[in-house]
Amino acid sequence: MFDSQNQVAPLALASNQLLRLADHYFQLSIQPSQAFVQANRSSAVLAVGLLGGLLSLLLSVLLYSLLSQRQRALALVAQRTAELQVSEQSLRGTHNQLRSVLDAATQVAIIATNLKGVVSTFNAGAERMLGYAASEAIGRLRLEDLVLPEELNLRAQALTLRFGRAIAGGQAMFAETVQEHGAEPGEWTLLRADGSQLVANMLVTAMLDEQGLWVGYLAICIDVTERRRVHEALAARDRLLEKLSAEVPGGIYQYRLDANGHSCFPYASMGLYDIYEVDLMQLREDASGVFERIHPDDLERVRRSVRYSAEHLSPWREEYRVCLPRAGLRWVRGEATPEVGEQGCTLWHGYLTDISDLKGVEEELRALSVTDSLTGIHNRRYFQERLKIELERAQRDGLALAVIMLDIDHFKRINDRFGHAVGDRVLRSLCQRIGQRLRRTDVFCRLGGEEFMVLCPGSDVDQARLLALELWQGVRNVPVEGVGQVTASFGVAGWRSGEGADALLLRADAGVYAAKQAGRDRVEGESA
Image (tube, rainbow, N blue to C red):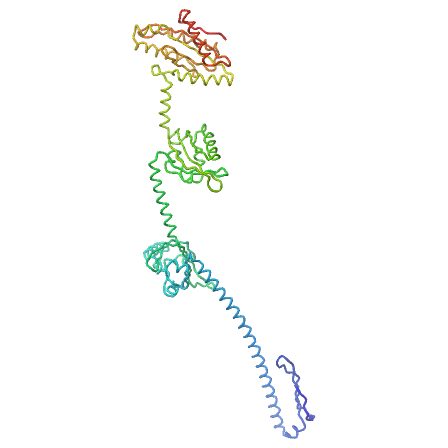
């Protein structure tokens, strides 16, 4: 470390050491001087001195080493302290952020508890929802104190049966979490600080520490009181609607047609089942079951009318037949008003009703309106309607068409001699005989009085003449009871292209007139 000014004695008593002090290396050389040798001639003294020096040297070295380690330890402590301060600041920031998030959730109550259920966290949403200040709840209230006791007891009884062991009321909220390591949200009636109640959807989960150990519970509550009130109001409205619709003949419905062509009935009253005999739950998903019930001859017309109503947003009205598994063939009338719905769909609100009985009455009235009440055959009105239809068909398709007109000979004389009752019997007898000899496609009508007409679609004048001769023979060859032989005069005319109904009938009437002039009881008509 430094050079001594004393002269070194030539003795073996010397020491050389390499020392490391304060991260530096030093060469230490110890040698006896002449003065030291003179003063310590004794060997014992010499040894003691030498050992003492060495001991002092070692103690000095140890002291310097301890000081050096202390300095390093202090440096490490300072470094670790700085790191802990940074971690503490970060943790404090995270805690503040978490607290801000919890307090920002003002519509959700977030409540944490320890394993005994004592509240340890009570956010601003819980304060707002339940009316307790956080200071009033934390460490003082248990989660079970916030729930209606009757519900806890009922829930505990149900869980006791479910798990096969006794569940206390206070543990009812935690039992599923403990038993099944998870729970589903459930509705609970919570108690506010002022004693009022609210319905909340509550989920209780376990809280774990960094080692995965169970340290408490976390309850998240959402107030569903208003939602339940709305649901109850909607349910009451639905019940009222069902009662009203049950009193309405037929069914009330909402029909939806999507842009991709898919259709369904979002709402269908019970009456729709009677009309279509299709499961209503199925109709809420897919309306194809309804269209499968529609009569094949009416299906395309119904589909076309629905498309037209959707394209023009015009009211939909239609009458069609349905084929039902139990009720058989029925008639249905439907009306609905369309509107544009979400995502480009069209919604109809309307009703359907079974009009089979009405159709039956209409058919009866229709039959009466075109039937001669005395003879039971068709009347003049029906003949005129069918003649118009058959003329249009003949003109359009180039088909043959002919008519046969007949008039009972001396009918007025029969009435005068035997009375109108007998005259009526003569008319009915003649109609029966002629009707038995006609084809299914022929139309037999009474024009009035004793005049009759046979419309023969698909027959030319020669074919009609042969039929007229057969009818003439059938009339004259069978006498009428109480009267005897009855004869008739026949006129035959075939339709000519472009000819109207009046011209055709006029020529047939001319044939009857010619038969009368020729002596009656005969067939007169033109040839092809």
